[in-house]
Amino acid sequence: MLELGALVAGPDLVLHGQRLLPDEALLRACPADLRGVPVAYAEAVASDTRRPVKEDQLTPHSLAFYMDVVASGTVLGANPTDSPDRVTAMLGSDFAENSLDDHSMWRDYGMAEFFWIRETPDHPWEGHHFTLQVHRLSYWGGSIVNRAIRDRYERFDRHLRFDKLERLLGKHGVPLEDAPDVNAPTFTRHWQPASQVSVMVFRAHEEWRQRRRGDDRIGDVYTIQSSVSAEGVARDRERYGRQDSRELSGRSSSEP
Image (tube, rainbow, N blue to C red):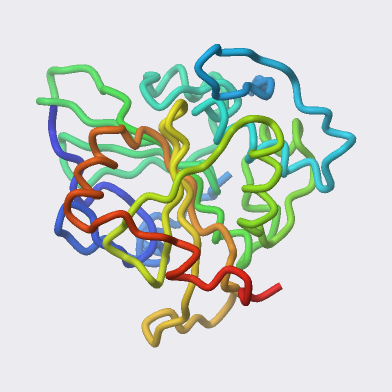
């Protein structure tokens, strides 16, 4: 299996010892328009018990979308290991396709991005992971969200507060564990073991985060990413120790 390396598009973070490309740079490099099948809410518990979210209890309905993703490890039923054609069948054909070389490729559906790798051009694409670039909402609002997702979940707010998401997931039996991350304390990471989904939360402003647009707030969810294995989390805990995100972030005094 190839290492993904610089394929991940997102904030100026460090992955596998490499600093990633800024999200804005990738969007400028790929100016194509960044624009389906609903997935039922699934409790990520050992018994695999599944029950639907009562969306009329969630305002806005986009909260149900984030809960579905964290609990099931899918986006509208699209798995991180699915082929490009399979993901397109679920999310639609309105995407920007990007590639840094013959071995890696990702498709940008606005907020959701799916990533693939392959050994050689003669090999088929293998699904690697997906990332929800939730922070983009603070710039462009809900219009950045893929049409298939909006048709199912309707309105998307510009901010997703981590405390609220964590509380709702906990009430439905989907707990999040603190996971150490190289980007702490600017970001903290929270991991759902059964679905192998991680949630990155913005915790502190830095000079390099000055923006012309957008309104990132401390305590906002920044990204949601799939395919974070237990082995990977264990390696990070061995490397960085068991970081207590509440102590690092001072959650009780986070911005509203």
